[in-house]
Length: 554
View 1 (cartoon, one colour):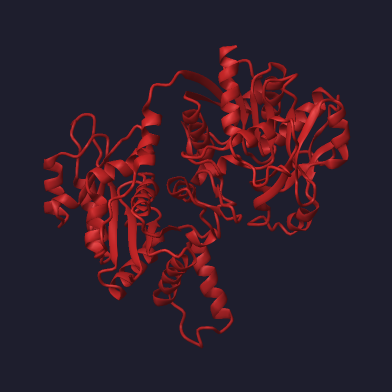
View 2 (cartoon, helix red, strand yellow; view 1 turned 60 degrees about the horizontal axis):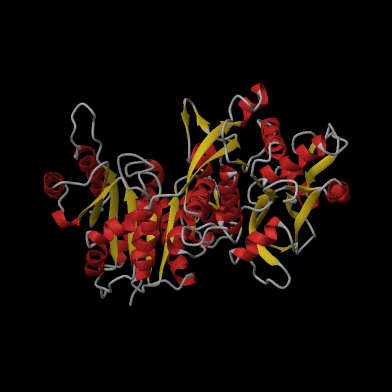
């Protein structure tokens, strides 16, 4: 069959759940046996998401091939249970860079290089390329931002052109919002009507509207949409707030969205096998026997007077996945590392069952994170350090146990006489040239895990080994600084266990304390949070949650 294309756009406000809607549609298609892939089109001129402040645009998602992408790429992985890659992620910066470089190489043979058709042709080529690489019959393309923004106009124009070139093979799904003002008490359709009108103005008539709202859509609202948006009432799909985002595919399926998509694309409908997904939802909604409190001491929580979950989206998801598998309900306490730095930790942490220090960069708040790592070690609270959290746990150990009071990472203090964390030699030239984008140690790296350690137990128990005989495993990485091997013997003599080293370069990947002196204290240079999925939680998170439950009971 010819390749089919499903464009997903947004209206009224950003952050509605276009990624969830796209992933849900993809899951339904995949569960019916269709080879499917997704492409996220971002508006910004950044080449990737690696240099963007997570407060600005959420937690960049790290792919197996090292691509630093939008967190919607992580959503796709979680829904489909398979890896995404650089061809699934398009930014306007990538598109412009490619077109300009081609012009400089005279590949346009002296033509005037213009936004249309050259920019739109490049967008379409990237969409088709993703289909070819993933051997997909159906491509779902999520358009970043909302309709009406000038930044994403060329994506919509590419959608229009592709529809014109492939009649019958392209449909458009518009995700929009129905606000319910408190003083009125009813959902209002006018914002979505205006949104669809903006979509019409660029030559696109949506095939479906996914109506996001607090409560299910009623008949009156469907009829209003049908009348003013020039659509059939049955093509308005209700998407009320759900207990979990993983429930959305079932919401869509209950309204026959998959069958309607197949009809519009002229492909044979096959009933999807959703039994595994239904069991997942049942597990998520079931009453939990264990309730645990976990403090996260980080530095990317606040935006003005508000706090953000998205800055640590992958971490929050990984905690949920592992908690559900452990029959547990997790309550997270967000602690600003700068506050800990100024006022100490006792003021902010009380009655916790576990503590996490997550990803981070630079000096701001670092001393607060070091304090938190030391607190968890001294108080025997289960501790999980992720990347920066591993590095600062090492700094804390060096100061408190080895007695090196000036110990630090050279990222924050270059003159330290005990640079227990230092810049990787391969990174020195990049830093001199300020070549920050896409130059870190990125993507999947293999490591050997030491037997009779917490790490070995976790990977063995939950099937995390590539080769159990050698203890070979793999994690995704995103860093420039590394444990300084010249101090390794000093640490090991004082009780720090180096439980994993990289296959290449023999770098320290995981450091922990023996369970004879601490119930669970582990830091990993990799990022297990980016590999966690609802059906396959990550072994290290599963073991951490298990330790938190045991700590609660004791």
